[in-house]
Image (tube, rainbow, N blue to C red; front, side, top):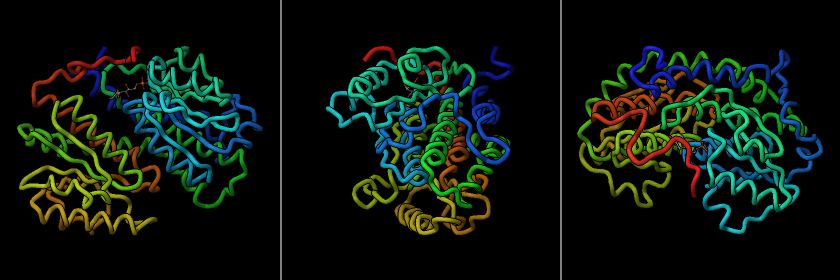
Length: 369
Ligand code: F6R
């Protein structure tokens, strides 16, 4: 049942190219238009919505944080992202013009379910992004977009996360399309690249051996930090979460721009710091800023583990370890940048003798508050 892999997690990491392709299947037509009519949200609701609110927990929350960048950039609608467990006790501002997106692999997470019930009581429309057919969250939502990742058995979420991202990008593009956002060259290029992204994920998987070796060499470390900017920031949070839950190591993700507001004090000799570097094309300001962040931490002794696009030479002098990922449009980069972090955490867990598929204290679906 593990298909020749030692762990379900390894199998599910390897299944990601197919999972991503399955999420896209039949949803982009030959002209590059989105066909999500299956979600059956009336066009008027999409046109009249004035705000998007995303609710989710854990890894699904990180997918939501990334979705915010895409939704705001492609639709120019304001988008808030909230931990479901905080949202419902905060008396959030919602009405008929709020589109709520609930993201959940299992479709059974109690906090997310309670958040969506609360949103619907206030008159908001709820779209679920879910991996489990017929589960409670989609049943109680106004509409659902299934991720079609196939069953995820390992407690730590991998393929569900990548497919949640794809579903979020599809929703963002669909919203833009339905609201008449100008379909310029940028959007056309994004749709083209998204429809090919599964091959890029495959390419990343083929180059993971050095990441595994690096992970094994760090097995006696106590702490690993993760830095990113823009969509790389939630990727850093996700990398840290994977490491906590699988390797039981202290791991934290930071927005690189926050370094000098506190976290830089943590940097000490030989501390491993993983940095997710945005593309040097496109928003190159961000790229240049993160290169100086890498210089700053390295000058203070950090061991830098740099995840950067192929051809990005500016990072080379400051990278103790360099992990290459294929070039993608900025907003899609999390689909390729997350994969090495999953492999890294999985290998560290194995090296430390931990139960990879069933980490201590955790359950696959959290059906209590
Ligand atoms: C982390 C992980 C959890 C889940 C969270 C939400 O690897 O799996 O953080 O993402 O419990 O679960 P779902 O998506 O089922 O609502």
